[in-house]
Image (cartoon, rainbow, N blue to C red):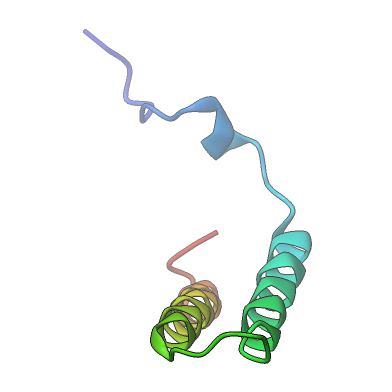
Length: 73
């Protein structure tokens, strides 16, 4: 019979750089939004840039809320 210890992958046991990943995500959002100023004629690119930046910002906000509520370590 298997032990009562949950099965986890090695990357789940090793803590990651939380602060570095947040800084990287914020820098990525800034770079994506600065790409709106450019030499292009259509607005299709702008839509994709804004949607990707907003999605990344949403992930950051959800992560902060989950950590604050103790649902994520």
